[in-house]
Length: 303
Image 1 (cartoon, one colour):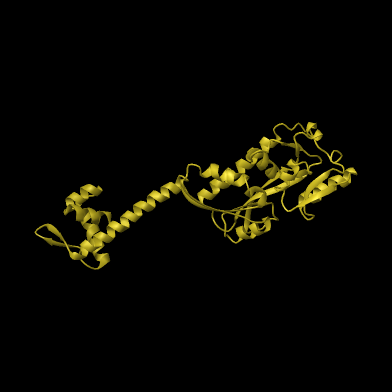
Image 2 (image 1 turned 120 degrees about the vertical axis):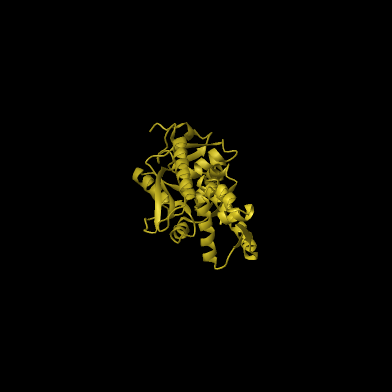
């Protein structure tokens, strides 16, 4: 089609051959092959000159449109290849959806104005199904039981004790169940793994866990801690998001808690489809951001 367009523009096989970097015989063969494929002549050949037929003029309009679209497609694919353009559908669990993941996302797309994003908050159980059914590109959730339909990258993070900066316990380098014996605590619902681990730690130490506030997620509990209503042993992402990414959180501090209470989180992608390069790059960026958060929180821990 490019050769045909050059013949139409120049009105000459020789000039068209020069423009496309081909020999005159090669261009003549191309035009003849195109005519055979279309089933009608594109040029009348009289006295060594080419005269376009009416069909050729119509076909030129179509050719211009097709080649322009190809040029746009190549340009778009080039931007996709350089990660300047793409689509990303992410399902995120509540603990990371308020600050952490939005902060990671904005850093990733900062200089990529043509990237389209879809971000929803769902429970970890729902996210598993959304990824397994290929409705979303990336899931960020609490670690699920492995499934053949899901690829997952797992992270095992420490939960941290959150308290007011002016609390006497803030002077301690490490918090234990003995330090929190009978003190008001904000904890998650009974079935949650952090509640189960925390309760087991108190029982093993012979200390009383005073459940003053029950939560579905730790995030609203940060306000109660700030007001001196309770203490929390919460997931690292919630604590980091509130202190590092939130505003006005300087009144709170984090301390390591032992025995260890863990919070397992995962990056999930569909297993039965190939990942777009853009999706792979963001998954890697998110993984690095999780490691950076972990290093930031634990930098001063000497345990």
